[in-house]
Image (cartoon, rainbow over all chains, first blue to last red; front, top):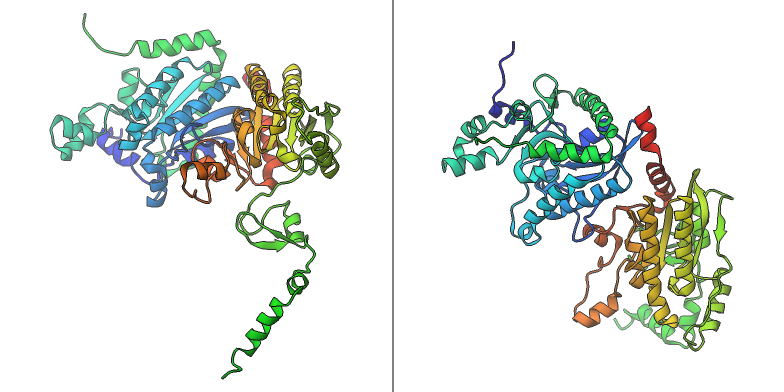
Length: 268
Length: 293
C-alpha cells in the first residue's frame, strides 16, 4: 500500500499551477456556461466567477473561486482572494438560483478572503457573514466542493451547503499554515509543522463530519489528468444532485441546519 | 523664395472666397457614418452591413424599434399588444400634440415602445422594444401603461419578458404622470418576478434617467450592447454640478459592468443566440424533468 501523504505534501500538490482551476472544471463538467458579472452595488470581482450552466441538461448556478495559471491571470483574479463584491455577487446569483429553483454548485479554492483597507471599508466581514446566514436559508440545494484550498472565512462565504465534498488532496482550515505558524509560534517558517499539526486534510474533514464526501483524484494529483478529474466530479454531482433534489424544501433546510448545528467538540 | 508658399496661399484664398465652403462640402450627407464615440468616419454601407455598429470601435449605435424587432424575433412570430393606446396631453403642455405627430410621422410608430409576443429561435417570450428616435424614447403614460400591460400578460400567461431599453428617461411633457410610471412599471416587474418568471433587460443606447431608475435596473439578467450610454443623470448635468470633466468611458456599458451592474456585454450579432439560450435556461419545468430522468 502507498504511504499516506502528509498535509504538507498534499498542499504542495494543491499549489501546483497545473492543477485544474475553476474554468477547467466548469468547462469539463458543464455545458453552456454563461458567466454573469457584478454584485449590483459596487463592482465586479474577478476572484469569483459565477453564472449559469447546464449539467446533463439540468440548469444549475455555478459559483467558483478562481486561481490563475500564471502571474498575469493571478493579478486579474487577485490570487483567488475575493473582495466583498465577490461575495455579494455570489449572493445575488444565489438568490437568482433560488427564484428559479436551480441547484447551486460551488467550487472552493481560495487562499483566504482578501485583507486590505478597501475590503474592510466595504465590509469584508459583513459580506461573508451575510452569505453564511443567507446560504443557510436558500430554498434550493447547495453542493460545495473544495477543490484545493479551503481558506478560512473566505471559503465559508461559499461553504454553507447541503453537502460538502472535497478533492482527495484538498485542505480546509481556519487559517493558512503560514498564518498559523506565525500566530502560534511567531515563526512563519514553521509552516510545514503547522500544516501537519492542524488536521486540515480531506480525510480529517470526513472524520470530523465537516466534509461528507471525498472525490478521488488521479494518481499523484488532479493536475496529472484533468479529464479524469472532471469525470470524477460529474459522477459525484449526479448522485449529490439526485439526493438533494429529492428532499422537499422544509427537509432540505432542516438537514442543512442540522449539518452545521452538530459540529463542535466539548465535554459537559 | 517669395513663391515658396504660392500653392498654400492660393488655397487659402480659394477657401476664403464666398461659397467655397458650401461647394467643398457637397457630399451626400448619408454617405458616411461618423461614430459619436471614436469620431471615425466609415462608409454608411459598411456601417449598415455591420448592423449599425461602428466597425472601428464596436460602438453599437441606435436602431429603431421596428428594425430591432426584425433582427430579434422569428419572422412572422410577432403579435403586437396594445397598438392603439393613444397619447393625451395631461398637463396641457404647449405643442405636445404636434410634437407627437411629428415623431409618429418620422418613425412610423405610435409611441416610443412596441410590445407584444414573439418567439426567438422557437422560444416564446413577451417582448418590449423602446425606440430612441421617438422623442428620445421618453416614458410617458402610454409607454408606462404598455410596459405594465406587457408584464401583466406575461404574468398571466407564465411567459418570460425581454425588454430592450432605450430612453432619455421620463417624458417632461407629461409632468408628474411620467414620474409615476416609474412606480407602476417597477411594481409590475415585481409581480411578474414573484411568480418565478424570468425577465431579461437589454440596455441599448441610451438608457438613462427614470428608465434606469426603474424597470431597466430590475431584471434577473441584465445584458448591454457594447459602448452604449447607460446612466441616471446626464453627463452635462453632473459636470456642471461637480465642476469637473468626466472621463470618456463614464457611463458606458463597460463602466457599468466594472461597477457591478451589468451581467454580460453582448455584441448585437450574438444577441439572438444569447437570448434564446437564456430563455431555454429559464424554461419552467426543466428541473422537474431532470429529477424524473
